Image 1 (cartoon, rainbow, N blue to C red):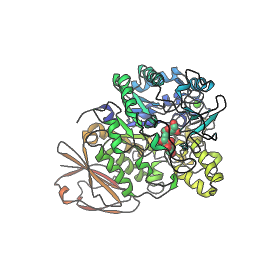
Image 2: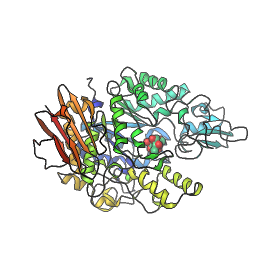
Image 3: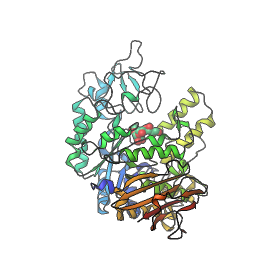
Image 4: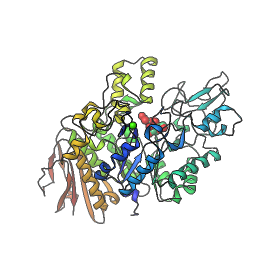
Amino acid sequence: MKRAFWKEAVVYQIYPRSFMDSNGDGIGDLRGIISKLDYLKELGVDVIWLSPVFKSPNDDNGYDISDYRNIMDEFGTMADWEEMLQGIHERGMKLIMDLVVNHSSDEHAWFMESRSSKDSPYRDYYMWRPGGPEGQEPNNWVSFFGGSAWQYDEATGEYFLHLFSKKQPDLNWENPVLRQEVYHMMTFWLDKGIDGFRMDVINCISKTPGLPSVGGDRYAWGGEHFMNGPKIHDYLQEMNREVLSKYDIMTVGEMPGATVEQAKDYTGKDRGELNMVFQFEHMDVDSGPYGKWDLRPWTLKGLRDILHKWQVGLAEDGWNSLYLNNHDQPRMVSRFGDTGAYHKQSAKMLATLLHTLKGTPYIYQGEELGMTNVKFPSIDDYRDIETLNMYREHRYEHGRSEEEVMASIYAKGRDNARTPMQWDASPNGGFTTGTPWLASNPDYDRINAEQATADSDSIFHYYKRLIQLRKKHDIMVYGSYELILPDDDRIYVYTRELNGERWLIILNFFGEPAEFILPDELAHASRELIISNYDDIEAPADIRQFTLRPYEARVYSLT
Ligand code: ISL
Ligand code: CA
């Protein structure tokens, strides 16, 4: 067992636009974050992951960066940022920043130079190609946000590649000068004292040479040519050598489409690449063959098989990151739990899962309150570029019904995660005194931080307890994982084990009672209840056979 702060840490993700507005313009900002650092300290998290705060025209809410070394005007100034970092460090927490270098904004000075002329020294910072024989796009890749991944540019009569929006041109990592620019920029922030990076779609930076088309439709998914591409490990190893290895920091690479085998290559201890990756397999358990908008019911078996595979796959080498929601995903209680009678119990059960699997848990802002998905009446209420593009394409090109399209948005739209943080029961949940850039979820009257911090039985306090337990018990960080009852369709049961101590975790994933029978090999003489989301369990209960209540979660120590 090799200790590391990033294995022991609990990370909290802030989506700054939606966290706290300090000046009434309806947009969250750095001074807003500063005003809430004591709240995060009380929760007990160790590391804050801050989604992008750099200069940006906000086509994709800061994931389109026009100046990597300066702060977005709406969020504040560099002085505010420095005060925020100091406030984080003074409280004994760490800060990791978002590194978005698969693409920049088309308003970045590099791109403006690049598009100006084929002879510009910046031309090769991006991926320009001439059109095909009939003037069509250079290949048939579809963008993550719909439509072609290529945009024609009048100035020089060529196309540029954009895997995301056309205001997010892909950077050309084949160019060593570009790579050095990125490393210098990373060093700039590390020298300012940050504690690491979350790297946006970092497994997409190496593309198959020649950028070949794929079979299928006019615009088709070309992931095989840009995810985990041929030079990805060279680039990450170079980045590690030249930048990361010089600092005591943590790194997590966002990697859609990464498999367990690939994750081992990215995070293995002798690889010199990253500490951990965000994998997405478990985020696809409720999607059909046409992708995220193609809704399917999830099953416990489907979810568990994936989590189990990753637990086992990275058991000896590599490290897992544990999450059930982020700024791109629906709220976990709405997706895997209950927003009605068992709201609290289900949120706590899912929290128990996230904090007792092996890996580093990531809490997304508002998760600790049990924030839920939102259903705005009209598409005009939505702001997310992915959602708006999908609505247009599915309604007007594919002719799907309003009901059907809105049902997909209600279930999967990214704005579910981006409604303002709910601080109290005052208008807009106390997020702003003005008009929020995206409307608040109306349930802030009952789900909010003021209520949750005052109620000792709240979801917030349960998170606090889980985080405290992690600080006391190495087994939660370093203990090995073993699946028990692999075939049960209602409960997920596993153990963790370290130095002769063994913990048993029992989770009922549904709103009905479920029978639990302890396998003989675990029928130990003594057991102690460590934590449960129901507070009336008789201790020491006989656990050889019992009925779990809806969404009940129990963690026992067996000795
Ligand atoms: O959001 C998704 C599905 O709804 C993902 O496909 C997502 O686009 C993908 O995981 C990449 O996400 C990251 O890069 C995007 C940005 O829009 C996301 O917010 C970011 O997390 C482009 O920078
Ligand atoms: Ca503001």
